[in-house]
Length: 266
Image 1: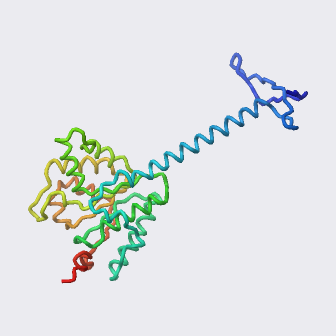
Image 2: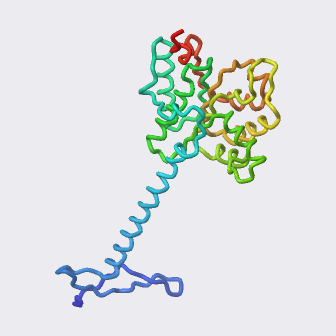
């Protein structure tokens, strides 16, 4: 251990409310004159930075995995959905795909609005809604994304009434869907069963949707539905629909045919 004649004047301590310089004698280490206290602080900061980087990476991956681990998806083929494999054959499909890509970019930039995809079943609404979230999630912005099939969610909540071991309670879903940054509610209205203009959602469904939408007024919520605005207003409380349609960006499928029926050879 070789000490040097120089002293480091960078270190202080407080005494009687004043900062007092605490000179530290420098040392010769590896042929270099250094302050042992400064070197120790550098090592400590480097270790702190390393631990923080690991923690940040862990937290970032945890947020990224919410989309993968906690989404409720009935049609498992949706898991492979992306803008790249959304097939277009008519102008409306090409326009809607382009619009959804634009929506994803706007949401990534921090804009807050509610994309609303409406049309008959089988037109690819769920595919595009999932693709929007996938594009955002893959950007790794430390923003959480979640895709929820509404009918399946309601079924799981009802099952929890008799299955005390189930984690899928009303509170679980309300808290989860309220907390994520970007949410897609898929196939809104299907949870009521057969669709007709006289059908109304149960108080149970209304309560859950009201609780979720009430907490998402400053967050983006993507919706897909087969229902017209008239049916939506007949089916749900006006306050629920008003929240669902707040600051909307409509993507309408008026000419697109049911892709699933189109593939039937008879």
